[in-house]
Image 1 (cartoon, rainbow, N blue to C red):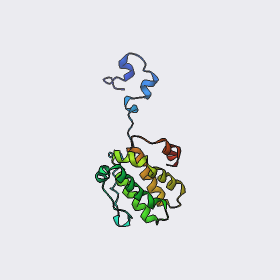
Image 2 (cartoon, helix red, strand yellow):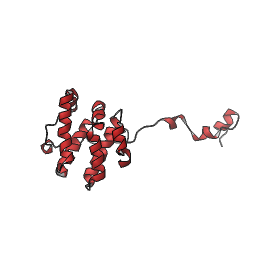
Image 3 (cartoon, rainbow, N blue to C red):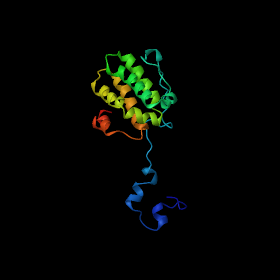
Image 4 (cartoon, one colour):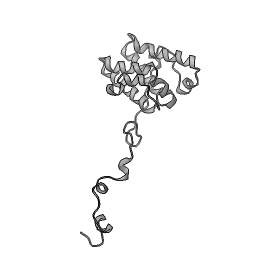
Length: 162
């Protein structure tokens, strides 16, 4: 080696422990891969409002709804996902939910409502790959942005379904 460069073992005067060689402080820092703006640039979902069977509201408007109005709005969102709605319309509803899921307060509400359970049912029961992929993306986004996941949703096997 070069005489002017000392190895860490030589400079400390003794042998380093195995754990000093294997682990660094940066190993304890966890950075999520999904949604990490340093490595992933996701385009904003394009919402086709003509396919929605309800009046879409932006995230701020949904947050401002009173509890009874919010429950009515969630019921309007839930209905097309649970009946014989065509798949393109269901995909449009999922894109709408995805636009709301970026707001942490709404992610909590949506994740822990019946919509979370409905997304797990879609994941397990649909034969459409596009619908299953979008439901997984939306459920994953909701789980990432929610501060709490209810035991009811956990018991449905949401994480296993993802």
